[in-house]
Length: 282
Image (cartoon, rainbow, N blue to C red; front, side):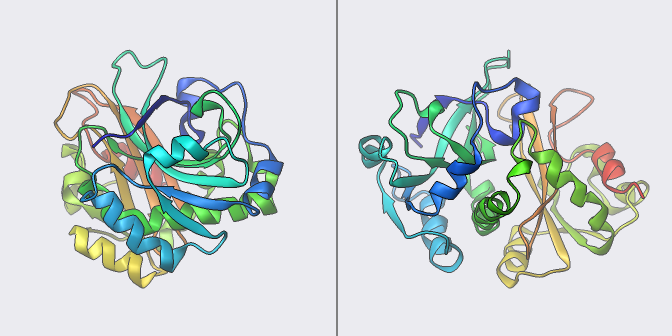
């Protein structure tokens, strides 16, 4: 898939890679509510992203009017402040010696600037490692879009959470996992945590190893008792890369846990046993 490529330090990973010269300001979030949101489609018309975003937007998005556009139209319109954009992009990090590339979905504000990296970034979520097929994350798209929308609402209510380490705000939700059932897909678990018996040694709450279809159903049903794992890693395409781990609510689309590690022999690609230990602390 051909995607917009830019070197970006994104909201949820700023503390791990350095800092942008600027952050979005409260007025950006207020101005967003006056925009029309343009959803930038992948150039591959058969991509899972295109299929799922067209399915999800009508049932989820209600903050602004929206329209689907092509990547060439994005280049034409991105300097117009009357628009906001939901766009996927290929992201690299200046300080990452592995030069690994990742796919993120971002909510950007239109602005008359030279570089896409200078457009106000209201919310960004890692979707996958670049070489990993988009069907690895597309089934969770409804949860991602709901989170982006809810995050904008939250910041408009409480602008103080804008910071270079915004995910710290959501990690406070980790205490609520005691009342949730965690759904994980086996392929997203590291070898040291790939069975229920291994997990239960350090994680005292309910966890189930399920299929992608079961995760999709929980999201569609907005099951208030369920949280699910979103893992972003190289999945065998390379040895060294970041592995992002996010626990998301099926009903409220809140983040309950956010962390990342560099994949190596000791810390493999997937949710690690030490992640379960961190989430299970009382």
